[in-house]
Length: 294
Image (cartoon, rainbow, N blue to C red; front, side):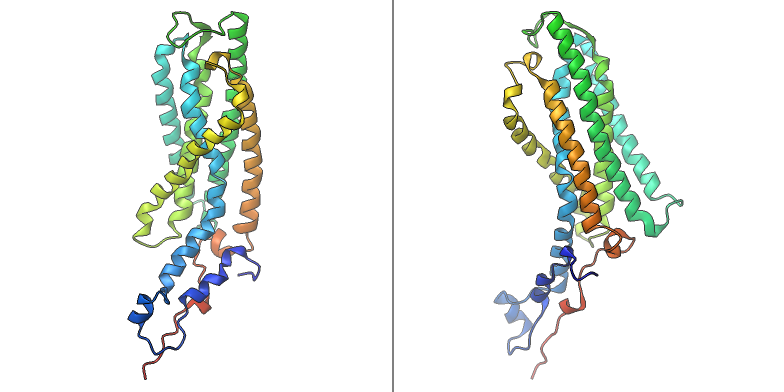
C-alpha cells in the first residue's frame, strides 16, 4: 500500500506491538499496555469506512425529507385517500432497487475482482436517484404551489374540506425514486462493508448502516433550521419548492464528493480496498512480538 495512504492508520500499529518486558501478557492487558492485533484491525476497518459513510449523510437527509414532507404534500390533494398506494409504491421500488443490485453484484457476468467496483456503482446509482428525487419533488411542488396560489388556497388547513385541484398521483415519481434511493444505497452499503468484518461483527453491518443513514434525521433538522425563512404556518403557504431546489443542489455536490472519496480512498491505487480482497489494513509491523520468558 502507498506510503501516503491516509487509510493506513499507521499510528495504530504501535498499539498492537508488545516490547520485551518482564510483565506477563495478562499483566500487560491489566495495565492497559496491550491491544490484540484483531482489536487494532477492527478499529482500522471502522476508520477506513468513515469516508464512505460521510457520503451517505446527504442521502439520509433526502430520505428523511421525503418521509417528512412527501405525505404532507398529498394532504388536501385530489384522491388523497389513495396516499397509502404511494407508500406501497415506495416499498416496491425499494425492494426492486435492492434486488437489482444484489443480482448485478452476484451475477456471473461480474468478475469477483470487479465486485467492489460494481457495489460502488450501485451506491452511486442510489446517490443519482436521490438527486432525481429532490429534483422531481422540486418541479412537482412548484406546480402544486402555483395551483394553490392561482386558486387562493394558501390558507387551506389539513382538515379543510376544500381540495387542491391536482391529483395526488403527481407525487408518484418522487415516492418511487425515494424508495429506489433507499434500496440501492442501503443494500450497496451492506455489500460494501460486510466483507470488511469478521464474525461476529458481520451480523451488525445492517444496523450500523441504518444508524448512519438515520443520521439524516438530525441533518434534516439542521437543514430546515438553516432554511427556516422558507416555511410558513402551513406547508401550503411555505416555499417548499425552493427548499427542494436547495436540496437538489446539495445532493449534486454530494455526488461530486462521492467521486472524490472513491478516487482518494477507494481508488485503483489501493487495490486491497477497491478490489475483491478484504480491506485488512494490518501491516507486518502490527504483528505481536511476544516477549520471551526468562
